[in-house]
Image 1 (spheres, rainbow over the protein chains, first blue to last red):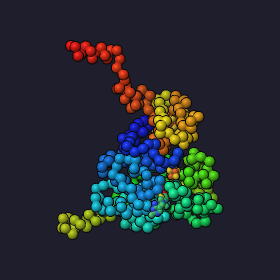
Image 2: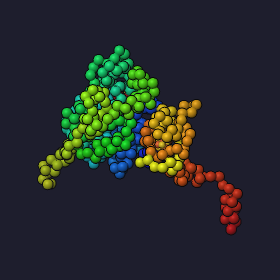
Image 3: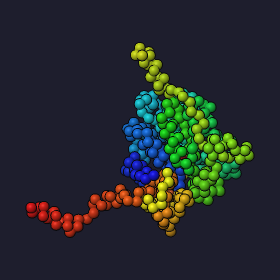
Image 4: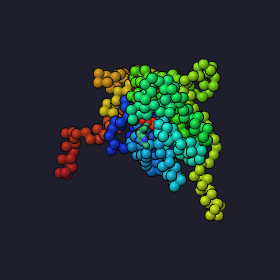
Length: 276
Length: 98
Ligand SMILES: Cc1ncc(C[n+]2csc(CCOP(=O)(O)OP(=O)(O)O)c2C)c(N)n1
Ligand code: SF4
Ligand code: SF4
């Protein structure tokens, strides 16, 4: 297990201020490490990787790592990424979004990127809250939990991000948590190598805005809770129905053989030019 | 992934540690503790079983689990730029005159 941190330093932009801006115990830092390890394990050159992020705490991730980075507007990361991928399909394009970014303001773009099945890897960092702007409830805040805008408990049902992506046609869908960094590495690298749209939902605790309002004393309590509640898909199917409630199911929900939109487009172009 | 006890040294970069306590809470061998400044400190290096949990779950890249015999990059660097000893000076003096 040696030399992991050394490897990560090879990819960080040391000109940025460290330690990074995330709060103590924020899961986003663990995702950053996992992303770097996954790209490294695939042997991709730094210049061939593009990180596109929206706005939010999660949007800070590309700032710290020495790939091509695009820090876009709130909710629109997938649109910029679509343009980049279509213009230059040779690039590996990875999109990083928060839950608010991907499903509240950017929900429309997520469902259409999934439907088009364009070759992007989309990482949705689900912390069940709007972290950066002060802990307002998002469309993934669980029923009954507290936030700045739901001081007496959330009345709305939450979105199941993985299910949304799956029914919209995404050809690779997985869920993982920051408590299982090795599993997360595997899911991220699979999503990157997958030819079509690959979405990985990563459960990443935010103690500052979500945990404190929901009876978690410390961020460690949130990680303990995550460890207790997460079950793999196989185990989940064996569980009795009463235990299934509020389990965090991890694993791959969808993995289809397919070709990405950019590849279909290239083929059509070759055909029309009579090159095939 | 876990190895034997005593194969590793655990290093913490205190400048980057924010004291979240994840390593302290989940280390199977209680290698670290939070000190009175609220940051992680290694208290029993010898108990580390090299499971690697802390290194990949530290959100701030502040932990390094390193093979015991090897120098860490920092130590290697220090070794390179150590101040000149009496022998070094002697050598350079001899070289310049000879
Ligand atoms: C068009 C637009 N609307 C609203 C905002 C304000 N805003 C900034 S970040 C954010 C929410 C971020 O939450 P999330 O995407 O869940 O990311 P997190 O901070 O939790 O990682 C909002 C609403 C904005 N910057 N731009
Ligand atoms: S507010 Fe929440 S999501 Fe943002 S850095 Fe802090 S813990 Fe992380
Ligand atoms: S590698 Fe880290 S978590 Fe594992 S035993 Fe050693 S100090 Fe503890």
